[in-house]
Length: 129
Length: 129
DNA sequence: ATTGACTATTACGTAAAAGTCAATATTATA
DNA sequence: TATAATATTGACTTTTACGTAATAGTCAAT
Image (cartoon, chains in turn cyan, purple, brown, blue):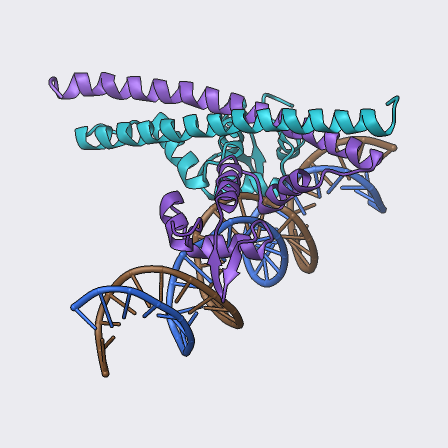
């Protein structure tokens, strides 16, 4: 990091993504790094935004959904109908995420079983592991 | 449900997926419904498996990963190396799922903020909503 | 006899999210 | 100043997980 700016490669290394990915996010209007000539320069704010984008990606949000969330943060709707619609969508998202969390918990329990089964077999086959 | 068998359409209705999806899962070797002539007949066990597949799908597992998990349940590896490898993969999956759960929790909190902001604006604009 | 609901197979199409590659700058540093 | 490292754009390709015809067989009810 130099002069308060991150280079694209710095960020790709930090987050384990490719440059193509960050450029893709820029093309999609998710981020707007500054430029010096043609070179992209990322501020700390850009970096934080990227972290949020990747978090959204991890939990299965589409680019469109992520863009929408960012949009809401930038300028929340001013019209009542829009606001109510947004709140409805937020509620739906919440339900979806709660279901997902339950799915994850269930799967974590299953993984525990798998592991125990493995340990059992290991104990049977090769005595000392 | 007739004779202990579910038809494909019954299941698509129950789970909100298309017949194409269930046939695709069969092509991919995830399920193996019986046949009467060419028609697929699903047992309760097939139905439960489909539920697990869809759960895996909801939390972002790929078909390959789901197939692998099913495989482990059907016949867990008998060789020590394989077992250890499996346990390592299980550990990794667990970490991934824990991260995902944290991501979800964080996002749920954010959604709370969004909703509050909406309520605030609604209170400002249209007094009684 | 026909209509409607359901089923099948084969095959091409598609959207999302990048990956890959080529050709070309720019920059750093030895 | 050479030369390696890093950057850019643009175009084409890939993978995943189905969607969407097109075509046709089965069966019950009208």
